[in-house]
Amino acid sequence: MTQAITGKSIRKPSPPWTSADVRTDFPILTSTDRPVAYLDNAATSQKPDAVIAATARYYKSMNANIHRGVYRLSVEATEAYESARAKIAAFIGAPHPREVIFTRGCTEAINLVAMTWGLQNLKAGSTIVLTQMEHHSNIVPWQMVAARTGARIVVTPVSPQGELDLAAYERLVADGAALVAVTHISNVLGTINPVAELAQIAHRHGALILLDGAQSVAHMPVNIAELGCDFFAFSGHKMCGPTGIGALWARGDLLDAMPPYQGGGDMISTVSFEGSTWNIVPHKFEAGTPDIAGAIGLSAAVDYLSRLEMARIAAVEADLLASAEKALRTIPGLRIIGEARQKASVISFLLDGIHPHDIGTILDQEHVAVRTGHHCCQPLMDYYHIPATARASLAFYNTPADIDALVSGLHRVIEVFR
Amino acid sequence: MSDLRELYQQTIIDHNRKPRNFHPMPNADHHAKGHNPLCGDRLELYLKIDGQRITDASFTGAGCAISTASASMMTEALKGRTLDEAKAIYQKFHTLLTTPLHEPVTIDGLDKLEVFSGVREFPVRVKCATLAWHTFEAAVKDDQHEAKTE
Picture (cartoon, rainbow over the protein chains, first blue to last red):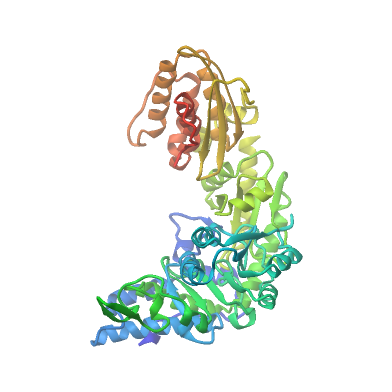
């Protein structure tokens, strides 16, 4: 049954496939009434037919609540939901499916750790190590926990090129840090942080490490075991899955010791007015009816990405990044923010004398969708002394024509402001 | 393309490039800060008011072309006006920008500020144009809180 929901009818192009080959899998990209060069993939990815169909199939043929029904539909829905968990665990190299907790997204996954592990383990004087390049979703939950526990937050600096200062990082961690929370890939700079090394340093000094994988899971092979982290948070919608679903992976022994996140149905073992006991992991962390359709859709997304192969996706995107940066550097007055040696296909840029918001509006008129603003990274904007950037973030289904549209759109921006 | 020229009229481009009254005013008697959290635009507005009449206006800050030009042209429009006249201009300006697209709108007495009529076609940019005026409202009230568009 699971097989019928996930994976069926996904065409695997004979490798090596190109962007043009897979673009037709995405209905929104091939729509002729609203053509768009979609370059806001760091905000959310587009969805292939296989994901849209899997979600619809659940509602059309299998819709029932999970875990407590004795009837066939409920059993099938439960199997589909739990096999989605197993598939996602395998995709990120997690040793046990029970260590994958479904959440609404990466933000909720981080909040879950903050409000459970954080409140249980952090106390006055505890140190949380963040970095200058974190997304607000990997800053604010820790500030909320710090306010309640008296823990303090210290920040790993970045270089002007957009790389973490590893020596400073080790000094901060060595000063008795309890937790490191760091992004795997910066959503502004594109920097791929050396997270395996960061994890080793954290562990050497007795700290745990949480990785924000929102920007990495869809763009490179991710293997939890190789990264050596303790918590890994990510969103489904940035990896071709539906919105409203994401996951937290955490080490099983940590999950067993953590208190529940929310109370409600499914997360309990027994309930009486004298007190309640908790269900086992992962259910302890999944109160209420979860996003069943979302989990099934995410499972289909994992199938889709797996068939394309993450290594090939990374290679295609590396080529796109190189040609996009080369083309952008020909534009007079354009400055790229973020020039790390290890970089994913995210390009933040400024145009001399033209505010990013104006760039975004004019590009939109040219049917090019880019993100403008602070990208939920105000501390990083402050570091660079800029209010905002324009950002083009590429995915494997972007073609050289999309880059051409961006470049000619930027020439149009300059023309309007001349 | 005609939409773009409607939005980025030459007057707006010119005021963005060379904002008028663009300086702090140490002896201002009214002052407020404005912030558009959506795009990060920030401005500070300074006013001198003699009785009921605005005798001087200036601003500082960083923002997009629409918000910079709006602030620049607002300071020009405010100088010499009474507070009641200024508030009437704000009302008209606000109506010009926020009337739904399917409703015709003709507003007299806005003079140069009519160049912002094109902003109506770009709903996400309306707040860029109104930030300066929100800040004006706060300055007149001596509201020490930052005026926000959100």
